[in-house]
Length: 422
Image (cartoon, rainbow, N blue to C red; front, side):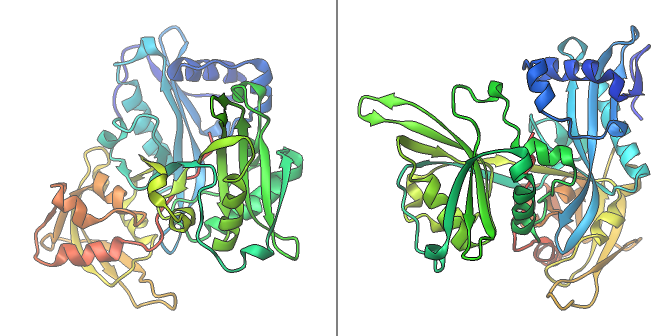
C-alpha cells in the first residue's frame, strides 16, 4: 500500500463524523448545501464502507466510500465494489492521499470478495493510472419540441398520467420499471436500498434552479400496468418569438419500444416549451432509433462507467462470452501484481442462450495477446472492441488471428450503461 506523509493515517469513518465527512466533500467539489437539503437527501453508501485520510491534527483531509453492487455483466452478475465520494480538501492535494485511498479501496474490496470495482468519474483523466478502463459511454440529447418519431405498433393502446413526484407514492413503481427495463444490460445497477430508491426521487427546492417541482409521467397499458416513466421538470422562459421553456429530464426508462414512443411523445409535446434536455441514455437507446430526423438532435457522448479488474481469474470467469475462444492473455498490472502475467481464457460448451462460459487459468504458454489491466477493464462489459484498442496501439497481437477471435468473444450485443443518480 502506498505510504502516506508523516503523521497522516487512513481511518474508518463512523456516522458520528458525518458532518466532517460531508464538509470534505463540499470543499472538494465546490458546492454548498443547507441543513434543509441535507435532511431530504439520504446518504446512499453504508458507513462501514466509508474511509478517510486524517491529517496530523486529526482533521479529515480526504475521503472515499464504496457501494456493494451485484453488477450485471454479460450473461450474469458479479460482486462489484462501486467507488464513490472520492475527494480531497484543496489544501491537502498533491500528497499522495488519493493513491493511498485507492490502494486501500482495492485491498478492502478484495477482502470482501469483490473481484471488480466500478466508478462514474467526475474527472475522466484521473482513474486510468490506477487501472480503471473506460467501459461504457452514455449519450445526452437536446431535442426540439415536436420532433417526430417513427410509428411503433401498440403505442395507441398506451396512456399517460402526470403527477408531482413523491417518494412514498412512486418509489416502488419507479424501482419495478427500472429493474424490468435494465434486465440483461451490463452495468445497469439496481437500487437495492431504501436510501437509493429515495435518492432517485428527492426534490430539494435548492436543486430546482427556478424550475418547477419534480414531475413524474407514467405510461400505462390497458391493464393499468406501468410500462415506462420519466422524471422531469420544466423551466419557464419567454423569447421574442414566444414561449421557449425547457424540459429537463432527470431519468427516462421504458420496458419496450411502444412504451418508449409513448413516453417521449409526451415529453416532446409539452406546451410552452421549445427544447427537451435528455438524461443519460445508453448509446443504443430505443429513442435514438425512433427519431425521424436524427440530425435535428444535438447529441453529446460522454464516458460513463469505468471498470477496474481486481481479481482477474474470478472476474473473467464471472461473465459469459459471445463466441468460443481459446486465448492466452499477457496482462500487466502495476498496482495488483497478482493479476499480472499470462492467463489462458478458454470457453466451454455453448449454452442454451447462445453464450459461452469460460475458465481462466495461469499458464506458461506463449502469449497470444498482450494488454494492460486498464484495457481489460474497458472491454469487460462488452461495449469496447479489442480490435479498436489494437488500432490505437493499446493492445498487441502476438499470434496472428488471436485478436480477432478474442475481440468477437468479448463483445456483447447490448451496450453497457451506468445509471447512478448522485
